[in-house]
Length: 235
Image (cartoon, rainbow, N blue to C red; front, side, top):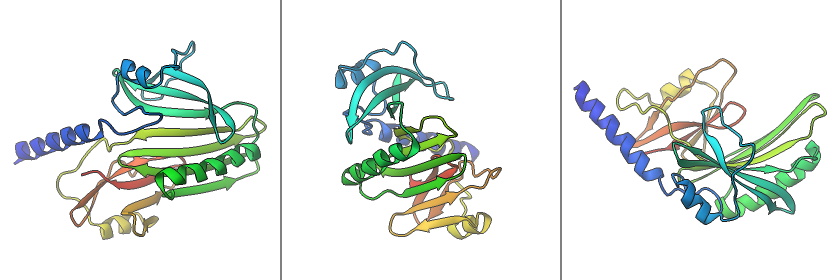
């Protein structure tokens, strides 16, 4: 029985891997592209002299400067892992305070709505020392996250991230029901008509890669910023 479940798990992972290949990211690039394939789509992108690195080890192998969006200048970073494209991140040029960044944020929200529909997550938090705002869209298995933040007197940052997020672990049996999930995590809120669950995770609460079952639908947790988790259909 254990061997049978392991085989099912491997099959699900392989099916997911095949499904996410070809997921659109940005400017004609797709998840899983090689460096040469991505370069062919964005011929003006170059190898950065000082590449950025993600915490998971993925590196910025291409960068495209002077990207204009909503009248503002951005640079696009293309992150690769094991030779495959996994993320495209666009960053607003320096020199903007939070209010200026938020004007660009609001304009980008309208622009992204025309492409992907209404966002599934939208938050703005202003404080005496720091400010943040974020919005998230889902297109197929691609997450598009818009995020603005400022801390103290520092310039604000504004990023648009295009990623394919997969749960790192898929449970194939003993899945909890929606009622059980909501009983354990009372801050889970179901968003009507979207088949998505939005979770505000208090600090220290480990939601992990829990997969819940809603009828025949199986959902995986994908993490966005500010400890927000969304549940999306994965198989």
